[in-house]
Amino acid sequence: MKKIILMGRSEAGKTTLTQALKGETILYRKTQYINYFDVIIDTPGEYIQTAKLGRALALYSYEADVVGLLLAANEPYSLYPPNITCMVNRDVIGIVTKTDREDARPKQAEHWLKLTGCKKIFFVSSKTGEGVADILEYLREPGDVMPWET
Image 1 (cartoon, rainbow, N blue to C red):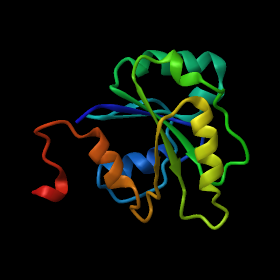
Image 2 (image 1 turned 90 degrees about the horizontal axis):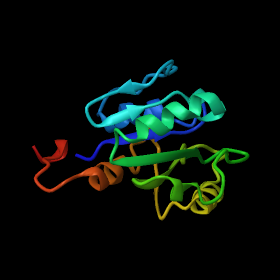
Image 3 (image 1 turned 90 degrees about the vertical axis):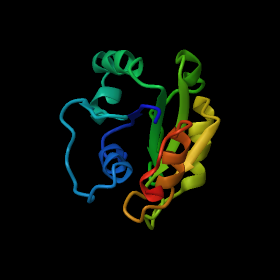
Image 4 (image 1 turned 30 degrees about the horizontal axis):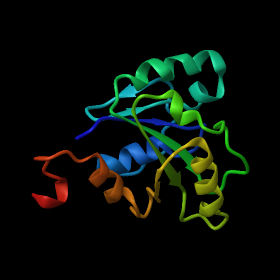
């Protein structure tokens, strides 16, 4: 599988999505530092919210094949500047999280991610599992056997 780094502000759903992608039980855990798994790099929201820590994200992005920019469907604004994806020499995908929430506005989040330059956007609810398989399929490389195929 392609390795993905998940970036987004605090409470965007990065750790919850990490657990869903790994097939784990969803438990709330505050990410305190960069967690490096086999094919997922989970980052704390503070890294994207603080300019000096953001440099670490740039360095860790070189460890991944794909950069996943997360934006919760209930966000009142986006931290991502327009056309930011051109600064990265990796595939950059948008991931709209928390699509199951009552206050979700997934089309607004999709619009903001498109403004950043994301061409491919996924809609997920880590709690219901919606869209998780789509991301796994995107990360799949020839010859990979997915968990549901065994």
